[in-house]
Amino acid sequence: MKISAAAAVFTVRDLDASLRFYTEVLGFTEEFRFGQYASVQRDTCSLHLSAIGNPNAGEPGSGAVYIFCDEVDAYYAEITAHGATTDGEPRDYPYAMRDFIARDLDGNKLSFGAPSKGA
Image 1 (cartoon, rainbow, N blue to C red):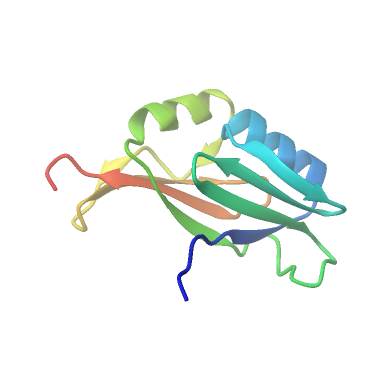
Image 2: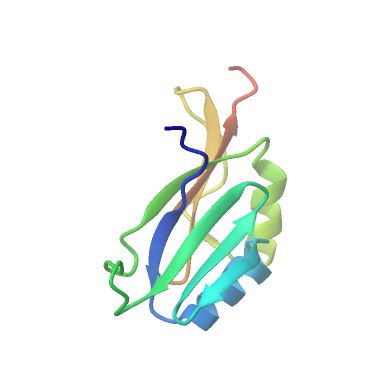
C-alpha cells in the first residue's frame, strides 16, 4: 500500500460562511461540495469541512493541522490584510521552522510553517 494524500476534517457551524472564509481570506479554492460537507484546496493541500450533525463531525474549533509551505511571511501579510485571526506573527522556532497559527471562524487551528533561514 502507498498513501498518496490525506485531508484534515474540520467541523464547522456554518458551511457557507466557512467556505467563504477559506476561499476569500485564506486563498483556497472549493474542490467539491456534497450537502453539508465540502473540500477546499490550495496547491496540494486539501482540507475538508463538515457541518455539525454529519457522522464524522466533532466539536467545532477542536481541529488542528500543520501546513508546510515554502514561505510564510508574505502569506501572513496577505491573509491578515483580508481579516484572518492569528495567534501572532511568524517567528523562528528551535525546531528549525518559521511558523504562525491562524484560526478559522470556528477556532480550528491552522499552523503554516516553512523552514527557517538558519535551518
